Length: 378
Image (cartoon, rainbow, N blue to C red):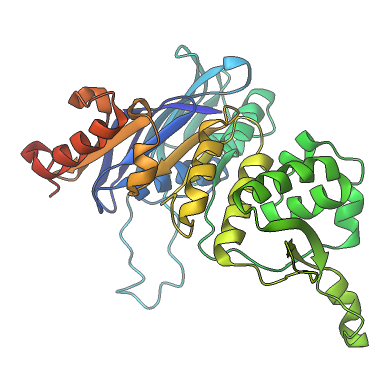
């Protein structure tokens, strides 16, 4: 999937994103704090939820995207805005979800696959029996071949957030058996979280795990080896031994140290999660990374940034405030985010005549965000 255009409005919070054009591989969202960069990522993430049947009060959207074989689709819709009466009426146990007022899924700008008008839904030119007013047409018709393709694409919107990466996770024998003869592509598209994928990679696809390990050890040259192991030991209580055999963790060995180390640093762990997440994401995923630099040490920034820049199989939506990251990503990939009167706009660096020289471009960016009255946030 590649997101080409997006327009979004949240009536409940009066937050509007004016239509933005995205680049096919890398989009670095830059702007002052509080301008709406994170909200842009959240709005993209919410479309995956809507595609899976979630009702979002007061949300309107219009997205254009392409899927496999460059097939192009447009999907737009609007939920009603409902007031939350549970705060003023204790007799209301649960608020009814917001209904979809309108919705349309279009193929190549001319053929309407599905359309909702009030309570009426037309699919493939025929009116359907009354269906749920709370679920998107993508979720309602996900078994239909053409819609299956669209839903699979939207399911490839992947937020990568490792503020507090898990150090331990459970892997049962049936999970390993299910993927015993798996391919890398099958594992990437399995829908599993990153850590279980990493365990399966280590056990069933060791040559692929080696690629992640080599990248990790390039970033941390003091590391001589890495493996995925269980926390069980010969001293484990018998009553817990079976359970502990299923609990996995990352272990490293450092140069000059014989013992394996379980409790690796949070920076190391987050770096490993970035590498693994990008390597194990399905082909043509849309990867969302907020505050790209968080918990990454100075020694990691260069390697992880280049890892993203060199990855052409994914589309990235990244936010960052870090001068190193902004300076080391060409202004051609910048998306400058500004807000005025509740409307968030996203423009290219060239729209502001920012220099193509990376060093001067960063200075230009600072001057624009600080001095231009037209970009003042209100």
